[in-house]
Length: 314
Image (tube, rainbow, N blue to C red; front, side, top):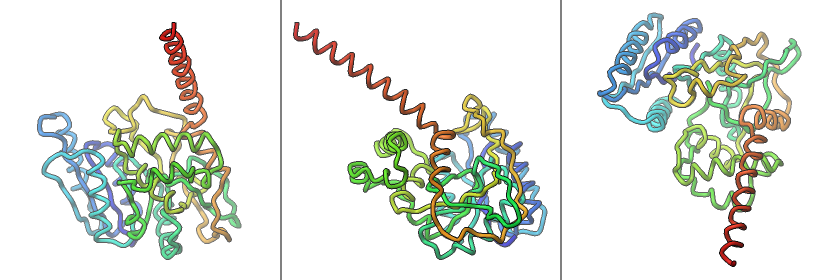
């Protein structure tokens, strides 16, 4: 396969080996590997890190390996951000995988074909490997559709898309004020949920590259390609995970990566699947539960404040 890959690794040798083995099957010709390093005081993590290096050194098929190895620990956000910038400084397009995103063989073919087909469609942000669904696909069917969601458990994109990544969120106040996200999905729970998330991002209460990416794509009215089969599995729900800890396991964590037989049938129109977007909002991001929980909290808070104001007047 000629499309270059960026692989981000850290301290998970077991999952890293599975991902590298999947890449080996597809005989990828060029791999960029970004390796973060644990803090020097963390002896156990350093041992795991060294095992990851051993896995990387086992890449033995005919391919070019370019490694970015850090000499000191940096946080997860900066490590990811620097790796993306490094990769796309050198390549115009490519595939991004992490050490816990396990792809099927079809994922690489799917990405390579569609990177080429949609190379000049500036309204398309990326090609996702994750869909959380496994639809039956006949020979005459298309094997993908379009969504407003930019899912990052294995994906492919272009340098010109990455340039739109906006971590400063300068336009957020105006976007929030104008209720712009109702144009994406006309659902108050959807808007409520993502307004809360982006408020948290904007106020720097947490940093997540994929959420900045999602915000940037929505701001620029960009959409993504979603396969009708789940092509990448997140196998990183372990105690060593940075974000996906074991306690956060959900129904979709055990979805195995599938394969696609047919690649040459394409949708006639580039239009988002609103039903899918609502389904992902409810089943993955759980906007209904979030909306209910937050409303109960704020309702209780209003009652308490009203009571305190009443007492103060007595």
